[in-house]
Structures are given as structure tokens and as C-alpha cells.
Length: 221
Length: 298
Ligand SMILES: Nc1ncnc2c1ncn2[C@@H]1O[C@H](COP(=O)(O)OP(=O)(O)O)[C@@H](O)[C@H]1O
Ligand SMILES: [Mg+2]
Image (cartoon, rainbow over all chains, first blue to last red; front, side, top):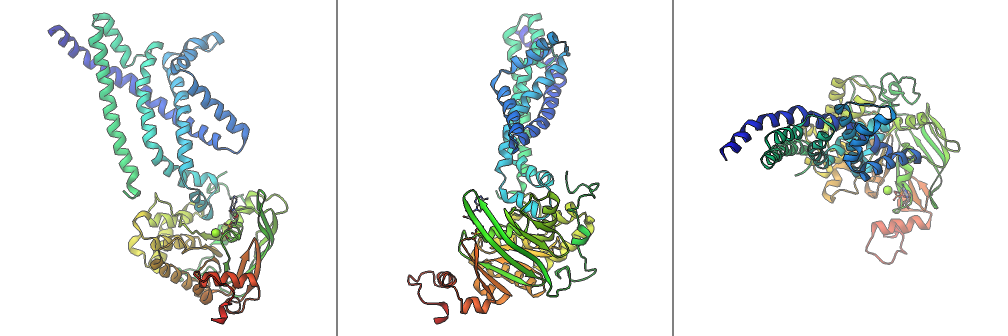
């Protein structure tokens, strides 16, 4: 028992470091790229041009209709057979970004649609182009609506990055796996990894509430 | 393709200097040009259908400088669609709109984006639901158009906006968010936001019908003052008292046509059309089942 406690303490910091240098950067980079992609896909999906909105619809459907693990494997283990060889990190970032792009696109689309039509028209009547109205009037309001669902997407992503351990990315779970294999204490180490994921998510959730409060300042409470 | 792109000066829709005919050091509420009675806007044969619903069936409208034109008519008669067409928010299926000094649009052919923007640049709309930007403070709402679209230097835009807010009694609300204001205050900010663009034509779409009755007066008062100061405006309203006092011409619309037009005294006391008479009766005496008496017989 004392041995177990000792191992727990000794492995805690290495696993946390795996999170800080692997999990979090991977999640942040994929989320940032994924959001840009999602915004583009959401706008394409809202386009009056049927071909454009059809492409967006197809992309969303594929991303949401296939397992993330399969997407990851196609990129890392599959692409080399057509001559594209990528390192673990770029593969993971590409796979997770594409995944976020598909899920967040629907959130952003719904948020844009939730802004009343009168807001577009008020932008137009003061002389704005659709692009300016979108940027200055619509997106700031859509952002407020989409923060809760997008925060959930981000927190899910943080947990999903554990899949990257399967394509050899050194992140939180891969560090834990190595320690577990080395020490043979699977139960202990995997529970410890779970605890550390949970702590990360608690911090992120409180960040989410702070962000929501800030964005809610212009709305009647 | 953003019009607010400063490098995009080749866009013929941008005529900011022309639109902002400044009155240096002058009254902030003064209209952007000296009122004479030359024609400012002519619309001819405006038609618009939504699917099978023929909403406008050949509307003619002429607005002179400094003139107040009031549109009245039952709900669904096409009043909002007329205003939206004048502001370039709606593209008619046919007809022409000529603004003095350009643009001149013929809707028989597809309209270039630039001409629609040029049309929009000449006028500003005050909506029934104020449509203020909820994420911006009052002053930010007002300077958004001048700063982002017309490229007015921010300090100048703030100074002008503050003066306008002061004139409508909202100087102390400049840093408030729209949700912190009463309906009447919101609508006054909506009016100031339109004025800040220094448009040649103000369009009001039932500016008081979403307000509680006790707040209607403060908004009508502002509009009346603007009319007295010589602003050119087209106003859709059910406030017949206001129309009687402020209007130079009243148009009665029904079923997508202008049924009758004339001076307020004539329309309100001696309407020549039966439909006008029945409409006025319904507004003046909503509880009276028998609409056969004309309003001047009371
Ligand atoms: N965007 C639209 N799509 C379809 N029908 C519309 C649209 N805008 C207005 N209409 C229809 O046009 C008619 C006239 O509307 P409107 O101009 O708003 O009348 P008013 O302002 O006099 O009440 C109504 O029957 C309305 O349902
Ligand atoms: Mg209307």
C-alpha cells in the first residue's frame, strides 16, 4: 500500500507534464484551427449556392458519421500508402482539427441563425456590406450564444486527445500508459490519469463560466 | 469585397463625401443640405411579389427636399416593403428609383451591387423594433456607421454622436447598453443612429407601434422636431395626430397600391375614396361596428 502511494506521488507530476506539454497544446492547436475551419464550413452551409452548401453538408456528415479513432488512423496509418507520410503530431492536429471543424460548424451555424434578421438589416441600413455586418454585428452576438456548446466541444476534445496516444503522440495518457506498463500498477495509474483529466476539465469549466459571464454583460439578467 | 475596406475606393457605391454634406460647426440636428423644394427622390412603377403574393402593384412616389411624406394603410398593404425598397433592403421586380444626383436604378434589369449600396447610402431607416446592436453601448451604436462605413475619424464621430444624443435628451445614457434603456429611449437612440449617418432621407417604419402608450409621445416629439428642422422623411405610422401636424403629404395604401394621396387636411377630413374613409373610421373609432359614418361627420 505504501508502495502504491509512493508510485502515485512519483508519477503524478510526469503525467501532469504530459498533459501540459502534450494534451493541452494538442487540444488548443486543434481547437483554434478547427474553429476557423468550422466558421468557414458554417458560412458555406448557409450559402445560397447549392453546390457550396452541399459540400459543407457532406463534410459535416462524414465527420460526424465516422469514429474519431478511424479518422485518426486513416491520416496516420492510411495516408502513407498513398505516399503521404506525416509525423504523429501533425497527423493528430489535422485529425482533431477536421473533427472540431465538423462539430463546431453546426454550433456556429445555429448561433448565426439565432441572431434576429433585424440585426443584419440594421447593419445594412447604416451602409455595411454583408461581410462587415457579419463581422461587426452578427458574429459577436453569435459568439455569446455559442460559448456554452463550444466549451463543451473543447472539453470533449481535451479528453479525446487521449486517442492520440495510439498514434504515438506523447501526451497525458501515453505517459500514464508507459508508467503503468513499467510498474504493472494498471489500476492505480489509470485511475490517476483519470483524476488528472478530471482536474484539467474542472479548470476549463471554471474558465468557461468566467467567459460566459463576460460575454453576458450586455444582456438583461 | 468589404465596402469598409479603405483600399476599395474604386467601388462606385462609395460616395461618402457626397453623402456627408457636412455643416461645419453647425447644428448637429440640422439636415445635411439647405431645404429647397426640389425633388429629392422619385420612384415610379415599383412592383414586388413574394412568390404568388403581389405585394406592391406599381407604386409611384415623389419626395421633395424637406418634405414629410406619411404612409398609412392597413397591415399587409405593403408600406414596409415600400420603405425597404427605397433603402435597398428589398429589390423590386420592376420600376425605377431616382435619387437626385444619383443613383438612378431601373429594376427591369438586374441591379449592380454598387447601385444598391449607393441607394442605401442616401437614406437611413428607423425600424419598428429599434434593432439596436445589443453588444454595443449607446455611443458605440451611434458611431458604428460613421466610423466603420464612412471612415469618419473616431474623435469626430464621438463628438457628433454626443451632440446628437444630447439633443434627444440621452447624454447621460451614452455608455449604457440598449437593454438598460426604456423602449422610448431605445427608439430615440435608433433615430440618432440614423441621423449620425447624415442621410438625405430618413425612413421611419412605424417607429412607435412597439412602444408602451406613455412612451409614444417622446419619440414622436423627436421626429416632429426633425421634420420642423427640415429633414426629408418618409414615415409609416398609425399616429394620425402626428401625421396631421407633421405631414406635407399623406399616402393611403391598400392591397399594394396607393389608393389616395393628398394634403393631410384633405385625406383626414374629406377623403375621396371609400376605402380611405373606412380605414380612417376603423382607426379613429376601433370599437364602432358601424363604419358607415365618415370621420368628418362627427
Ligand atoms: N420577405 C417576405 N417574404 C414573403 N412575404 C413577405 C415578405 N415581406 C413582406 N411580405 C408580405 O408582403 C405583404 C406586405 O407586407 P408589408 O410591406 O410588411 O406590409 P405593411 O408594412 O403595410 O404591413 C404581406 O402580405 C407580407 O406577408
Ligand atoms: Mg409594416
